[in-house]
Structure formats: C-alpha cells, structure tokens
Length: 73
Image (tube, rainbow, N blue to C red):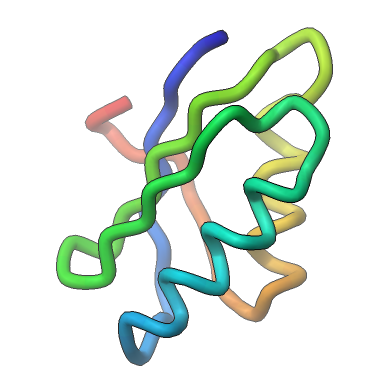
C-alpha cells in the first residue's frame, strides 16, 4: 500500500469531499480516502498493483471534480 495526495478543484462544500471519499473507497484497491474540503486535498491509500494514479484521477473526475497530483505526496 502507498499513500498519495491529490489537489482537488471545483469542490463547493464538505458534501463534495464526502462524495469523493465514498467513490474512491468503493474502488478495488483503495484502502482509504480522506478528502479535506478546506485544504482542497485528498489523501488516498491504495494498492498500486491493483489501481494506478490515472485511475484514481478518473474516479475523482467522474464524481465531477478535477484532480492533480500534489507536491505534498
């Protein structure tokens, strides 16, 4: 398992952050997702043998938000 952080744009409220977490945590290979609305960041712990960074970004985009790898990863 590894942890990475993504910068999220287009969130409007804490419900947006919760929505991202639910979608990510439903994905195979994701152990946990913690999205912080105030910081506009999401930290994902996942198995890179099952899921890659691009797929995580696709899941976030599918929920209606944009994601870029963060310099804090």
